[in-house]
Length: 234
Length: 234
DNA sequence: GTTTTTAGTGTATTGTTGACACAATTTAAT
DNA sequence: ATTAAATTGTGTCAACAATACACTAAAAAC
Image (cartoon, rainbow over all chains, first blue to last red; front, side, top):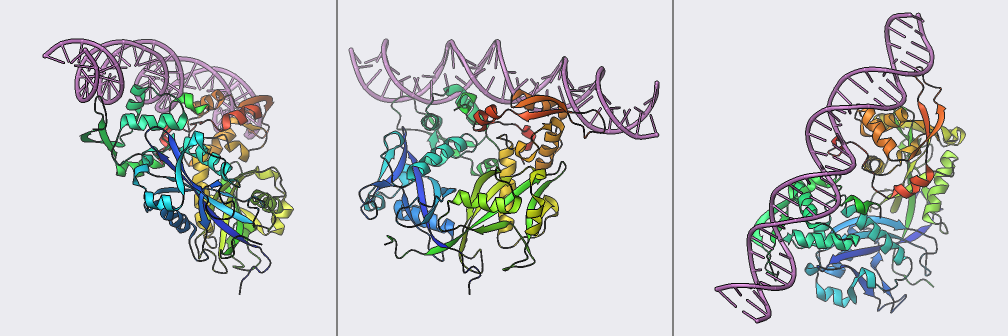
């Protein structure tokens, strides 16, 4: 029946890198494995592609299992295919990059998978080549958050400009001038003033904005060139 | 022996999108298939990942088979994994994006694979989802050529500024102002004047430059923001 | 030597970025 | 109530970059 009798059939895994932001630090959703192989060690959330399943659907399935969320921002990042990357059996892993609003996740589902939100700078060693996958995802986040309006995916529906600035400062680990940041951001025309104010603040309450979803779509593929030039040499 | 007895083993293909530039048009190296399946139709150059082969090595092997070249500019582009994308058997395809200096390729090897250089705008329909792969690659080329110094990979070792301009005009399908292009390009510091002149010209001979390979490396990951803003809305 | 074609450089205007300062709002402490 | 501390919102100026546009130089064809 098959046209390709001589070729090798290989396991195809899906691994997900899930970023969140708690208002202060960028975090990763990682799994302390209570199953084999490598039980007890830390890894990314993953699984295998089913025989009759679209690759993108597999990623959505795995993300849903862990977070209980269906409408997550997901991109395919890169496929890792070193011959010996999984010592158990030859496995090619397609890595997906996800950004979620950290308060939206289903904490029961997370707990049942033995998963936790871990700050980037205090993360444990991960199994296999998952370290490289995370490094690649961080690079991708830094690169793309400066060119496309993806940072919003890590914030609540309604957010303030100072919140967004703290997010960018966390991503790039640099201080940003408030005034220039605000001017550049508002000039994109992507933000809509909701008229509301943030009540969490202990001092002056900041204006709550939401994304203009029409402009978001049309502006996504245009270049944004958002961050200050000082960041570009990093 | 294996830890994953229940998971499906799947064929992993590698497909290569190979761009060239003849001084006038962007071209693709495509195969008129004289083998099954889909014999007689056009497709990308491809093959299967071997059981003990690194994914990146597989791409290099396939590119070498077709072009006779070893040091090609290659990036992994995207993995295509619709369940029914290959009607013969479930196959996941990892697509690679390659830029080559069109005069360097081994024309014997190309001929023996029944391959030809085809202009982007006159290309035939391709099999399976190869059309989408090409569309994705063109998008990638347009996006990345504006941000990184990758256009040089399509030109000879020594090239002139007018040649490079024609390349960019072909990529974006827009006219570019010579004076602004030249100023912006030289200000990157990436070009070294070889002191030679281009003899192919019928009129005033243009200066031949080469890439400063040290600066190329350090500047690659910085953003370039090279093209005029008019292009960004495309 | 005149014409045609292409290469190379200059400048004035406009827009954008970066550095920096001050005024306004809110809560908590006195 | 008044003041202090923290944080938000907006304004200005100088430096730099981008755009639009015009002239000079070199080479070959006649």
